[in-house]
Image (cartoon, rainbow, N blue to C red; front, side, top):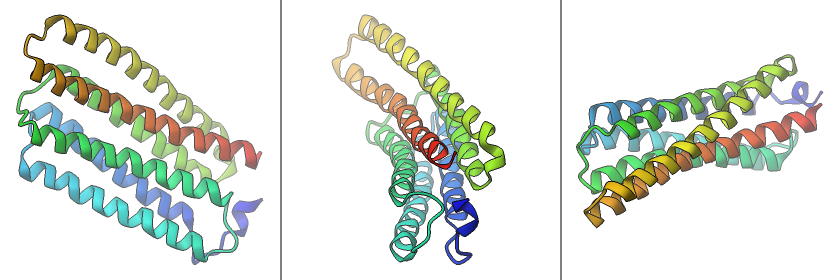
Length: 208
């Protein structure tokens, strides 16, 4: 199989696992921020540092891809997967930074719930990507991709219910605009996790 042909100097699986660990770190920090209502300067700086380190890994993957002749799976899939994971981390950082800009310091129960689902989704995605390195983990990879999809569906339902309540109860238009954007961003993180899971599924199909 193509997996066995991967040159030792360019182990993309190691790089992907490093990238997903930063995604997990971002999701965990976001859950902490949401549960504590802490989106101050120092807290957001921690997220920015995670995002910058993750960017370095994404750039390294692209650099190695440009210099590697034999890859474990299609070059386009490597690029797409790296970009998809990077998008997840970027949007989590965007949310935390936006909370800082909006000076939101409350503990919002819906944001806490969303952050918990995001962490679960990111961890499931990371597990699926980790399983790509060994064809024996085929079913585990598929199961984790299905879990990412399930969580995205939950996020869709939550977003619609929360926005419906928001439009019914919010009287301050600025308040409404802020939280509408935040809730939409949080659900979009789950969409991006699902996009990455679809890339993983595509790789699995091609390797079958």
